[in-house]
Length: 332
Image (cartoon, rainbow, N blue to C red; front, side, top):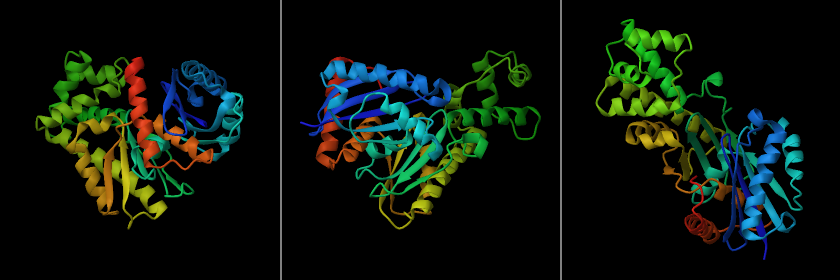
């Protein structure tokens, strides 16, 4: 029996699973953040060692027994980082082929029926990457948010919402219900108190306040609704850029939507859909409903010489869910 490792290395947590060649998940390990931009390569290695130790202890499979491994890595943004990434991972003691990708790719592989297409992520921040059918060509945006004007995650939505509160206060736009929502959220005395403390850095309003924008929009506020439409169009434009790079315009393929922003529903997704279909009318939008680490182990299988088919993919999904429920593992 051959065994494979998949790792989803994130900015806040890291998941690793061990699966056999039939798609049966036998081991799971959760550990801390592994993005080298925040914890360094030494921190990334420790995170991987901790999670792999837990997964191996659960299944009894040692690192020398793996036939292939796939790693989706937050912060793996440029080819120049590959040598040090590989050197770090080799310290795990792997004696098998392994493949590294940005952490947006495993969600695409896990969520797309054929394991290829475009993966669009919008959580705290946003990112977009794509793979062709043979996994030989990759399309991408930079993934650097506001620095590169690729900004439609919840943190950017909140920042723009507070800008609109400032616009309304200075009468650049009509009054908006966003004002009262953010004053209450921040515990401010009034809008001027909110803006003073926010601009002076005494009030920090984080990405979790994005829910306020959706609530206000659902109640009919024009400024909030237009803001969410902006976010949908912006996300759609990121996907269209990747579609053009990969020449997918005439193909049927999946656009996999991952991240908490998409919980906002039709107000966000419909302008996103319109933007994408104007460029690629056969594209299908699908929500990611399985953990991205499933995609990482599928990448590991392929790198190890196994051609994972839909039966194996489904077995991974079902056996992971069974293990997750039986062991009361942490949520994804």
